[in-house]
Picture 1 (cartoon, helix red, strand yellow):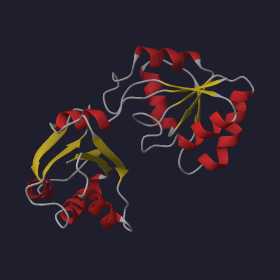
Picture 2 (spheres, one colour):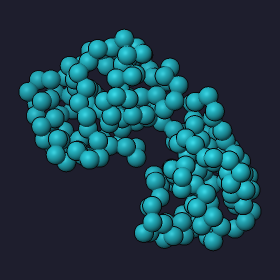
Picture 3 (cartoon, rainbow, N blue to C red):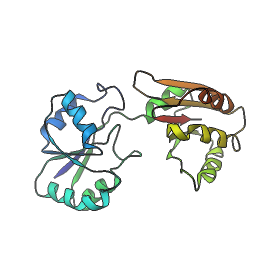
Length: 218
C-alpha cells in the first residue's frame, strides 16, 4: 500500500519530472485539488486517468473513504494545482491519515515556488524561515512583528490583492533600509523579481495591477 506525492508544474508545464509523469500513467487513481486543473495537465501529456477532488472544503469529509480505497488495493497519487502537496496546499491530513493506517508515503522531489524565489532573491539560503501565508486579518500584525525579529532570511506567500496592504503594514515593523525581494509568476512568461527596499517595493507595485502568485523574501 502506497500513496505517491507528485509535485506538479507551478507555471511552465514542462516543470514536471519524467518519474512524476511515469507514476501518473501507472497509478489507478489521482487525488487532486481541482480536477479541471489536473485534467489540463494530464491532457497535455496524453494521460487518461480518473481524478477525484481533494481540497480544503472536502478533505475532512473524504479522507477516510480515499484512504480505504488505497487499503483495498488501488494505487494512487496525490497532486495539488501547482507545486508540492502539503506546502500551503491540501495534503497534510491525507498523508497523516495514510501513515496512521500503515500506508507508505513516497514524495517525489519537484516543483515548488518557494526554492526558486529564495535562490533568485540573492539573500542567504543556508538558513531561512518559511511562514507560508500570512493571516488575512486577525493576527497579521503579530505575525509581521515576529518576522521582523528573525535573524535569518524570511520567506512567505501572499496573494496579489493583499500585497500592497502587506507591504504598507511591513513598514511599521521593518526598518526602511531592509532589503526585500518580491517574486511573482515563477516559471511563467511574465516572471518578475523586484529587489529593493520595502518602501521601494511599495512604490513599484502601487503603479501596476498585481497579478500572479507572490513570494516575498527579506
